Length: 324
Ligand SMILES: NC(=O)c1ccc[n+]([C@@H]2O[C@H](COP(=O)([O-])OP(=O)(O)OC[C@H]3O[C@@H](n4cnc5c(N)ncnc54)[C@H](OP(=O)(O)O)[C@@H]3O)[C@@H](O)[C@H]2O)c1
Figure (cartoon, rainbow, N blue to C red):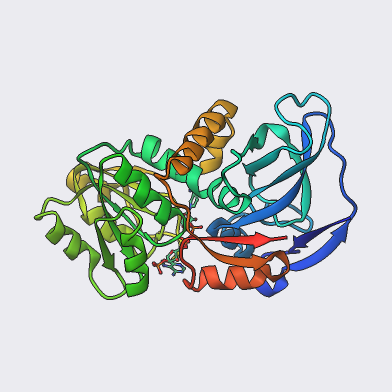
């Protein structure tokens, strides 16, 4: 038997409830994984609250990244065996002690990477991978602004961009978060709860602005993010933790011939080649010590509602994991 956390309809975190179910058996191309750690992400909050379309017409199991051990393998699975330590990112279904998924989404974890770290980086680390390589191909000498720098994605992005030779300016809410971000690759961190970040970015760049802004905060920041960009600069909008952007016009890009992109991780991970290449680079960066993965909050799976409350009320830093 295994436990799943389900929710019947969009709503508050108090509606998340545990149910006990029979273990499913893997069919062809599938594996069963016993979870050891499950990542909590802002997308879980967007789906739970109804900001994103409700994907099923029955109880939904949230959770889009996890790590654990393969406990059963279906036919025609060649790259995995019972006992392998593995991780994956896939929309929904991970808030469970055990689950069956298509093996094509699953990668093996190096021995020296813990389940907690793997569960914290499959979604967030692979997001940074596509952000810095694809959405805007960051290069040595660039100056880049990254919002929510002390968060799960932000704390990885600062280190990755610094490793590429980028000067990374961050924003974060509060002195403690700013201090934490400074330990994760950022050369300067602006407390945007107190200071006008557009003004400060202009000061820090001698009025020039930045080559790119990665903005996952949305409503509260996008207009000023555009104003921080150099001519031909790129705005990468990849989230909306403060709410969706509702008043943007294409002509807002004209002032500086700007570029805008709005990417989604799962369009990248649906390619097995991309997943293998990007996850092996991600694990190499962790093993070499280039990427420190700050797992700052741990909750039992049963306390998932507390994890959601902490994340949506801006009380977390780094990554949050659930322990079954
Ligand atoms: N498109 C994609 O493929 C993709 C993939 C992964 C993640 N994302 C996005 O990346 C962002 C970061 O994800 P994460 O899971 O690592 O979360 P996180 O950064 O750990 O947490 C979100 C942070 O957003 C900031 N924030 C600003 N205004 C907020 C508000 N009104 N309410 C709540 N938080 C607010 C807070 O930091 P401060 O207090 O420092 O402001 C908060 O800690 C999210 O927007 C997420 O949706 C997108």
